[in-house]
Image: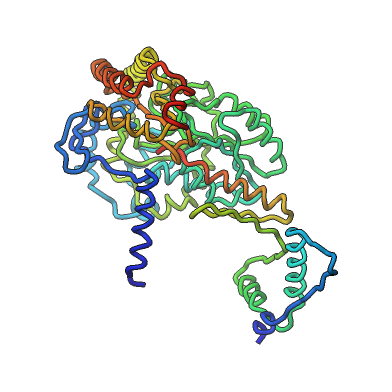
Length: 105
Length: 415
């Protein structure tokens, strides 16, 4: 029941006609909407059950919002996470850099 | 899921893509023991022919040494073929502990742990000793298995420009807030044959309170005055915290590797390193052979001396002939051709002339840095190298690359 409620919840933010948000600004707005939905969801969303199961198994659970940056090149895929875009892209660059380290046998 | 036609088709097209990109690897079938001269069937089904081998990691020429083979036979007779177990259940024989003790003494460290390969050692080491509060700082040209090990570890990963000490120092300063810092480098870099500035790395590590780990797979047994490795060459024996190395190159060339270094770190690997915990023990026959290899190395430096002399001689022959070489002091001598197809064509023609070498190109080396990597061995006699240089000169003339600069080669063949 809770899962259905979460899936059907939606937030709409009408923007003024003269607002021309950049991609970054759109991403920020979307993240804020998702945050509100996540913390105000009614019932018992599946993620809370997962958290409880892990706590029962001895894990100390924390959660927070983060940026995810990903890069794709053909079959390759690298990702970076961070609380700021700088952190996320820094991690992405490091992962991509490791992928470049091919080396001889 | 069945291996249905669309699934098979997907994988076939992946393979075809590798062929189209010139990245498809074909095995050459060798019909002789490893050595300076080997008998090779290539392409598959062709009559076998004897060629001079300039592409093995058989640096000390011990892969088929009679004493090593005899010791391996004795190990087989005394301790059996296999142990059917991981080390910590029922896979540790007296021979394993003996070899670990001998490697510890040879490398000048505190303790050693054998792994099925050095790839396994590198894959398991970092995860066993580092965690989220730590950082690994790797040279950008380290071996692929170190990259794999870094990816398996929760520690933050960072890199520094190849052998750039100023950049390493910048990174060490940047990561001052981390709990532990581990600098990781190859001792001898397999692509270029150059040697890590280990003395400078150790000095920086002391200044910034970092640990140092060296993969000395292309150095153990012959670099340094008595062949202990890069740490001996650079005068920092006892100051490197971790050494990973292989039994699969100079030390007999069969298989197996190890982590050697600070007692507590090695013990943690024994407790936690997954390739050690979940993979079979090194076979007794290999352990017995490796013990004999160490006996030979401790009796005389004659083989590493001959290897050094061969490398110097070969480098001089190539330079005088007008080939463009990467500078270095190791037995890895890369002949730079820059262009991928040229490297493949030259390698193919050299094989036809009786010299076995392999062309390396992107993604194994950076784009525009294609080359033929020649590797010397103590098993090479002067006549091998003299015959090989004749073939190199003949093929070099054919492609008009002798005495040509990088710019001239690129202008003719493309980047």
